[in-house]
Image (cartoon, rainbow, N blue to C red):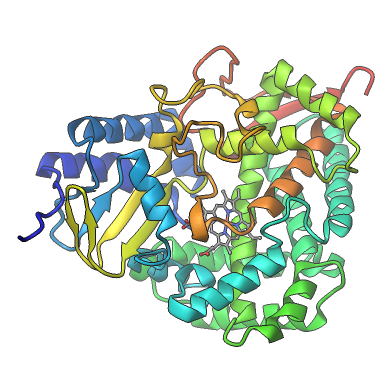
Length: 448
Ligand code: HEM
């Protein structure tokens, strides 16, 4: 008996999905955000609309996965929570993260990165990434070197902002990237903006995937610079761990693993700044975070509540809204067959904001992450860092550094949101929060 094909969306539903979900995500910039489009998306509530559209599709096709009606290729959308688990658990085989569009975009600056590698070579690169990023440990082996860096840079940021009477993204981002360069390459790279500007340029062409020619010379220069840094392997940096571990892994392409770090610390900065905006407007959460700092006996290396604040910021405003896969062989589902080479897409905001299945879906409720790594959601997918064997290997390192940055910022300083954003604790938080336009006034906290 032949197996039926999966349910397929109508032409109007496919067009609606493309118009409301795919185009705005692409326009915002999949590899590096375009601030103006993010501002536009916030103003016209495009993310709220995208969530409504996916919900309408899931009401029509609760069984899923749903194939879009596209002339060019097979593309499925995952709509059922159980199917999210299936796809993430069965990665990288048969659900490969190295999908065609991701390969086209990332090849601009990291063709040998684990994210777009396949087969045995992927396993080698993944193992190396996990060792260097200390994936399984909440407190990175180099936390003792990293935490003073975060504190120093945040103190400097606070001093500059206090002088100006305001903190804006334009101040935060350079300070955050000084942290990133010191963590990745060591103190001597602190002011090496040229190095991080190179990846910014390469990411801009990555936004256009196969529509943009490769900047081969720039990439070659960038790779040389990374290799130089790995050669120096400054003590107390991720580069030093990578340089020490790489020889154990043949074919690991160590220099090709580094751009992903520089790239992915960008969303970590966004999540921190957004968390700061919510802490500024949610006095109860802020007080709880300060209490955690007063009670802390981990030297700032394990701050579960502030880590939860970052996770909650990423639930509300996921920086990887689309998790993409491509089937390496035909896959059988209850409702039909998914062909080989089929794109598979999980739209995280649809799950993260479903008030029918999670409590306080549109509010800031960091406590949901305290007891349970999955956000205490009764099996409902909350997946800001993805999940399963391909889960972000940098998750714990991100939580370590971002919670430390927030601790320093809010510890003794009160922030008051000055930009137009409405982040009322009793109201519905918006689907898009434009980090680029957030602005704060600041003053010393009473008794701080
Ligand atoms: C807020 C910050 C970050 C978020 C939300 C995030 C989220 C993610 C997500 C959703 C994936 C894709 C997983 C999948 O396809 O299932 C991923 C992959 C990855 N992330 Fe992160 N990430 C962040 C920061 C970082 C940082 C700072 C690093 C390194 C220092 C990092 C290293 C990686 C690597 C190496 C992969 C590829 C994993 C693989 O293909 O096996 N990430 N991340």
